[in-house]
Image (cartoon, rainbow, N blue to C red; front, top):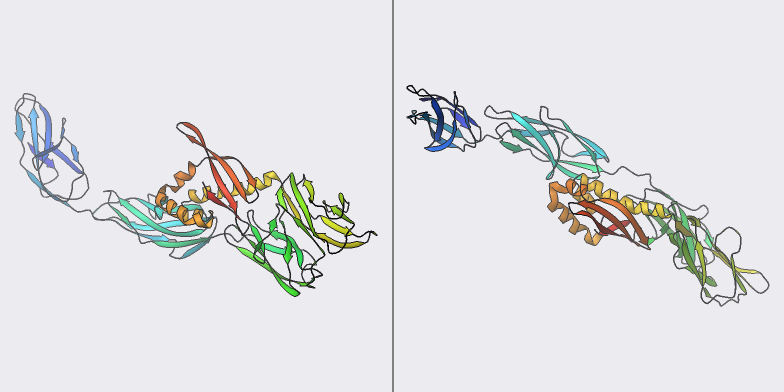
Length: 463
């Protein structure tokens, strides 16, 4: 009875598996089994020549191995002991070669990954895995361990490579930082023709124009929120003016913070208008009702004509200033410029003013909110919790950023389980989205609350 493998004095590296074999003969009786002992503790047995067994999980140390043969009659024979040494695992070496530290890309980015990896002590490299923070993004099993990380959204990322060898020893590379910037959107803002350099004989003015911008962009006029239609026309009714030249700054800002501005000048006589016409809700979803409220009256007025569609036809005429205001309902989506004309008893025009109303198509409005949901799913799927947290209102952003950081490498799986968007609604500057998720107990629904901020951009308040 003798152990044939491993050889006496052999050396191994933990946790390398150790193959054991033996020869055994019996005087007239067949060998039933051979049991192997490590430091007198049974670790396994075999019943057929060459009585092969693999000892796994050996920790560093020196061990005495023996084999015990048992024949069919119960006879036993014990081998001479052999000694083997198990050394500590020698981790592989790994370094990212592509991308370089500080590399920059434009979203949606495709980032090529490659690494040098070598194993020690006769082992081989089994795989190289690439991580963005704690999230696995790609892997490879053969040199030069190339892989691709696709559809990467804007953000800052820290990449590492983890090499695992054939003995399961592992090592992680030094980190590599890369930056992905948002693709520069087509972004522009332009005041209506004739507005820049114009002169008005009152202390407020309608500032309007058009933008070229992605969905869910906001416009401000001198820092005050303007109304933006789904047709990319914007307006701010009753922008205050001082006597003389007034510097007006128009700014359009995207969801990710890109902006474009235009500076214009409007001159004012500094004399307040005799009448003021205000609109309670100059934007809404069709059908939408707007109330025109008139104030003033130092100058006598006989009739007020309301061309609520701005098409040159008078829709409503009142005798003097109406106490309750005038309502107009807009059934079709689009931008409308209603005109209000004041006349004296002789029919002469005393004063006219033009406003701007934006009526949104329900589907177009819903698609803006839908885009907020699809954006957060996309960013979480890419493992970018920091970028995803930017879609929340400012006072909740840090909370969600910390929450996403705790989820870590499971962000993508969480995104996949969020569910399907089934509908939504908006009222003023608030909106709701309904998401339905499939669970083991059936369908469950939850609500995402969104709010339009002071910059005109819709962001998530809670989900």
